[in-house]
Amino acid sequence: MEVSSSHMNIQFDDTNLRAAMVGEANGLTPEEIRQHSPRALEALKGFQEISEAGAQGFPHLPFQAQVAKDILRFAKEVRGSFDTLCLVGIGGSALGAWALDCGLRGPHPVQPAFSVRNPRLVVLDNVDPAFTAAALDSMNPKKTFTVVIAKSGSTAETVATFLIVRDWMSEKLGRKTRSRIAAVTTAGAGDLHALAEAEGYAEFAIPKNVGGRFSVLSPVGMLPAALIGLDIRGIWKGAAAVTHDSWQPDLKKNLALRAALLHYLVWKLKHKSIQVAFPYSNQLWGSAFWFRQLWAESLGKAKSRQGDEIHVGQTPVAALGATDQHSQVQLYVEGPNDKVFTFWAVERFADSGKIPKAGLNLEAFDYLGGQTLAKLIDAERRSTAAALTEAGRPNCTFTLRKLDPEHLGAFLQLMEFQTAFLGELLGINAFDQEGVELGKKFTYGLMGRKGFESYRDRFQAYEQRRKSAD
Image 1 (cartoon, rainbow, N blue to C red):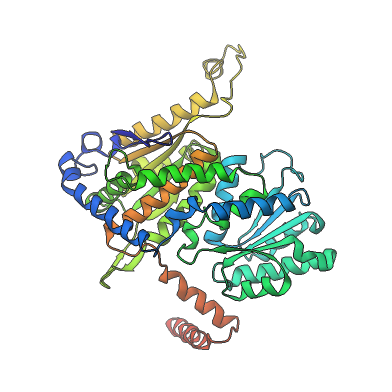
Image 2 (cartoon, rainbow, N blue to C red):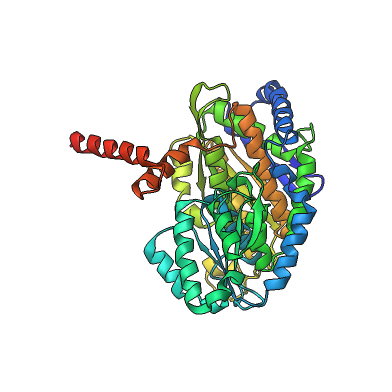
């Protein structure tokens, strides 16, 4: 069945999730869908209550007009003074901006030449010293603007990298450095906020009820987007349209709810523990990595809302079509039947990529002449879906009419709603991440942060167990 968003032209085709296509062992029967549809409406109601109570804020982000005005005003003031935007952040503080840049300007290194009118985006999202040094060598501190992002204001990787970037800029800019830095963090709280106030950085707030992986439509993603010249009003407009649709109690109109229900059923009833996000567009490749975090951190949980141990989770994998037909599809077609595949397609590319008629009298060349790369990549996707279906591997497809700010904003918001609804279907809190926190605390202990001595001691006990295990 193929359904569309009523506001934005995004289609969802779930035909190949059906038992009629992949068999009852792997696909859903009409009765299974009918039987569980009331649970989807309960999930909608449950998340709506959470949102309306203010506990989770991502559905409200596209409607924050004052935030949009503040970001656009600031971007207008500083644009033209830099040719590189250096983003210092990690996880949800970095992946959203990269997804937007990749989706709307294209993946590196094929973007147009960088200039003060078209600044490049350099994302420092790891503490690999060689990577950081190479990034600094590639930038001119006098032509760089830095955005540092950390909701807590104390993320070790972000703080360490920012200290290096701040020092690198100060050596060349001196006191002017503060006018070339903006901080995005929780309003009025945390050490990054304290530093921003002390040094006079421009500061933008992350709402307290918006987690990092759901923050792309907040200043976390939208400030960097505006600074590199993306149409953030268009992004918000598309996201607002999907938000309207995602509150509709109609599975034919509410793509996010329908997709959540069907993915839940294929996962739990047909035991597909791996979700492959399979964009057939290099521009959506950044969004696939953003989606991996969204899906993994939101749905991988040890406990239910009631506190029962459940250890639930579906492993997200990113694959790029048609590239990964030549690296992963062998496994997908003939390996363990433990996966569900979600293709992401683009109906209309900005350039169809016409293939010349060469007249070489060579069959492998001549049949392609006069056709287009757009037609070829579409044929590759549909053929891969057919091959997976014949092998009994359930799959579905989201199709965006085109890739522009409205469609990309709509799609990212749709993925966030789908994730939130699936969390409700699973009976978990999709918005915490306790599994991430212990590793952070061990790191603080090892690096000597005050207040984390007990985690240093626990780590030392772990090291002792390792030695005794030899």
